Length: 257
Ligand SMILES: Nc1nc2c(ncn2[C@@H]2O[C@H](COP(=O)(O)OP(=O)(O)OP(=O)(O)O)[C@@H](O)[C@H]2O)c(=O)[nH]1
Image 1 (cartoon, helix red, strand yellow):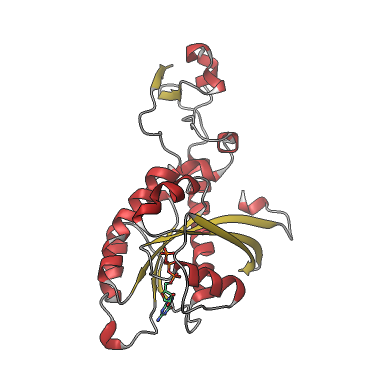
Image 2 (cartoon, rainbow, N blue to C red; image 1 turned 60 degrees about the vertical axis):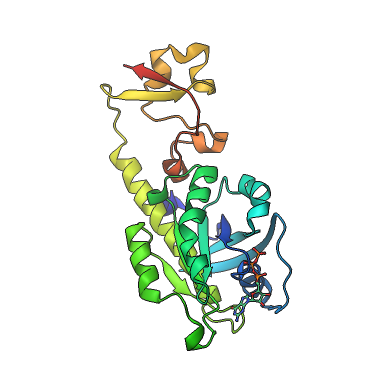
C-alpha cells in the first residue's frame, strides 16, 4: 500500500511505449534516459529497454522503459513483453494522422496481451514531434483530448524528442497517473474488504488454490477472483491485481457458496 511505503524506498515501474513505426518512440526513450537525439534512428526490432531513476513528488522511482517495434511485422516479437507493465505510453506523431488513428488498435493490442482492464490501467497519450512547423500538424490537440475522454484516458501531452520539449514531463505524468490509479485501486480494495458469502466466485481451473476441480468451499471463501497470472498477482493486498481479467479462452469453474 502506498501509504505504508518506507521512506527512501524506490519503486520499480515497468513503462511500455507503443505506437506506429517512426512516431519517435526510441527517440523519446533515448532523450529521456540519455538526453541524446539521433535524427537517423534505425527501426526497433522486437523490444529494447533502459532504466532511469526519477524523483516524482518526493518519491523515488526506477522506470524500466520498454521501447517496442512499431512495425506490424514485429508484432509477435513485442507482444510477449506487455505483461507486467505498470504504465503504457501510447504514442503518435502530430504530423501523422494515421498514427493517431492507430492508437485505438495499439490500446487494444496492449489490453489483450497485458491482460488488463482498460479503464483501470494508466495509459498516457503522447503526441511526439511537436517541434514540426504549424502547417505540418495533422492532429489537433483537441481531437486527441476528445478521444482520450471517450476512452477514459485522462493524461495527454505533446512532446518533442528533437528539442527535448516535455519529454521528462511525459514520464512524470506517467508516474503520477500510475499513482492515481494505485490510489483508486486501494480505495476499491478497502471497500471490497468484507466477504460477501452470497456472491458467485470464479476460480481458474489451474490455480493451486482450487486443486482437485476446486470443490472445496474454503478455497473460494477468500472472496476474490483468482488471476491466471504470476504468483505476485495473487497477493490480494497488491493493487496491481485489480487490473487483471480472465485470459482469452480460459475455462472457469463457477463456485456457488
Ligand atoms: N521532428 C522530429 N522528428 C523526430 C522526433 N522524434 C523522432 N523523430 C524522427 O523520427 C524518426 C523515427 O524515430 P524513432 O524513434 O526511431 O521512431 P520509432 O517510433 O521508435 O520507430 P520504430 O522503431 O520503427 O517503431 C527519427 O529518426 C527522427 O528522424 C521529434 O521529436 N521531432
